[in-house]
Length: 128
Image (cartoon, rainbow, N blue to C red; front, side):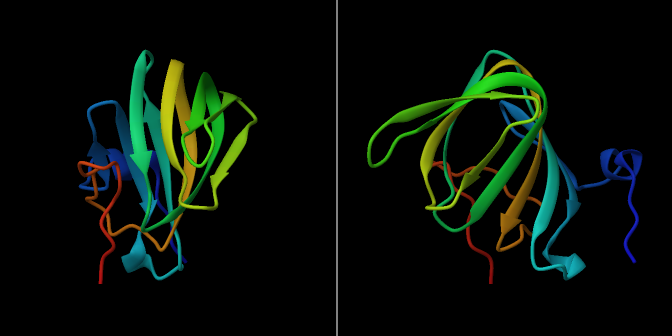
């Protein structure tokens, strides 16, 4: 069994900071679950262009407000608030905007290794 607390994560290298976000990575590839699980905080007033071309991601908003704009093949914008889930099931290139600080619970497949941050095109590298 795996048991971790937010305090455990915050005091470890599983707490990863990006320019517009902070990711608390509770489950990683090394945990052997077949997916990773994180709590991600997206700071109010920010906009992040993302393209997880190597991963599938699902996010459940538990707090805050914003929107996700899917860019391809036809731009569409969806509002986000507590109680909303979005799943990027087609490796969708998108822009994530937070109007109020958002707390998201995020699942990645394949799982993250732990220290990933977005590269120039907004993706995470695929690890071996």
